Length: 185
Image (cartoon, rainbow, N blue to C red; front, side, top):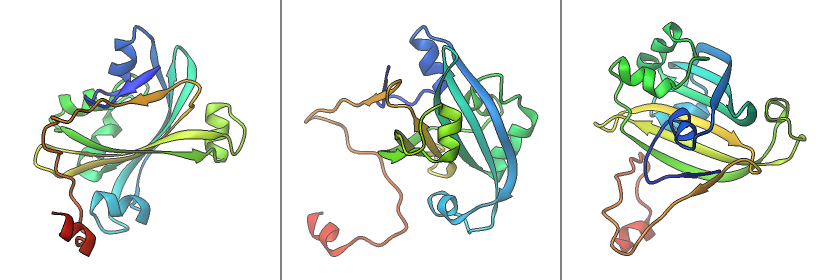
């Protein structure tokens, strides 16, 4: 099954649109101090309270993706009143007034760690597709950083582009432009 990136549907909505059955098994949801690897993309200080969620995502009851999401505290706290086994977190957050409008995706490959191996039923070190996603509101504020690992025998990613593509979406960065980037613009 191929997931396109020309729109930004939730996993549940995307799978339902394929006439398949989306499922999930929540494993952990907790308020924690932000570790450096999530504080940086969320543009918050390390140690700032965040809500972290780990779920196993399923397609037709088959383990497909290990989801590791971190939400800024204001949005994430809403998850404590949500049955994370009932469906789309994004749909629930939208119903609660959280505006998740745009996401930046970085896709690469990673070897399955112990958690991935156990959740996805793959050997330790097996290749997985990793999607790191930074979701923002309409005003550009960071809401969620996610590190999702997919079984490549179940999922692929597609994108379509053209020479006449619209201006690229603004990607916020706090690092100064390199000399090479300055001379290219």
